[in-house]
Image (cartoon, rainbow, N blue to C red; front, side, top):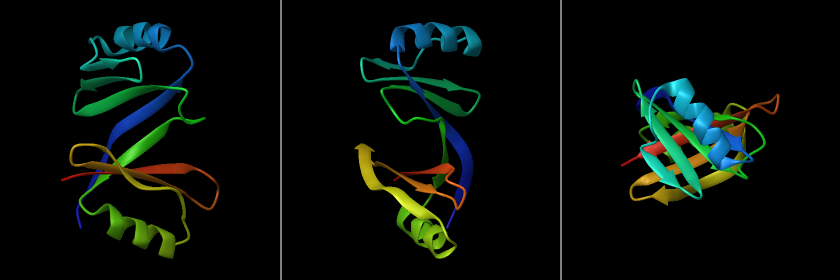
Length: 111
């Protein structure tokens, strides 16, 4: 199973337009995805996303080749599934787990 590392980080925001201005200035780039429910940037091999009304904390997503196998491995090691795998776009599945201290870890699989 391949683990490609952290490539996607999603930030919860309360005001998408204000956040978009700040992140565009920070990243020196315009969004590559811009909708009322999600704004995303692709910069230097990273994907930075802004999610209105999303989770209470920033979530880093580890890109993996087999999300189900990685979930099984993580739960066997003591993690707890917070959000079961779901499809969020064509060929893209995400899930989250919490570690024993309550930190949220994201998993992302592209087919």
